[in-house]
Image 1 (cartoon, rainbow, N blue to C red):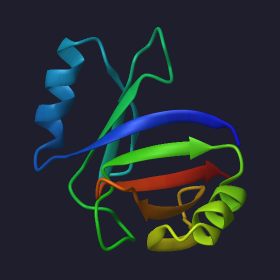
Image 2 (image 1 turned 135 degrees about the vertical axis):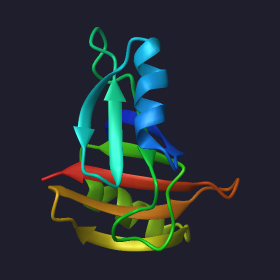
Image 3 (image 1 turned 120 degrees about the vertical axis):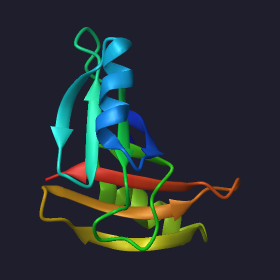
Image 4 (image 1 turned 90 degrees about the horizontal axis):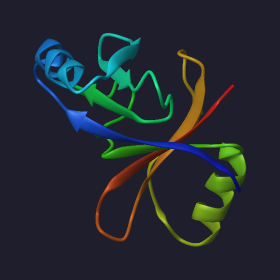
Length: 115
């Protein structure tokens, strides 16, 4: 099971303000779907932070995202071990397959893989 990157998701009512602030730290916008915007380090592409007002298709906003090599395998492991699935495994229109799971601390984790 390979992890490709981990990205904190910050709830933000003002994405532009977040973009400007994190730009001062050297981050640049690498993705923007309107409801979620991700900024990354130009020198270290997996160093990223996302800002979202609300998730487009899920009932909750995740606290962090973990991109994995095989999302179906991770889903099976989580389900088979009794983890609380918060949002079912599904393909999204923006090119990812994902599900949400709650960790033992109550945090919601968006587990995804790019299709």
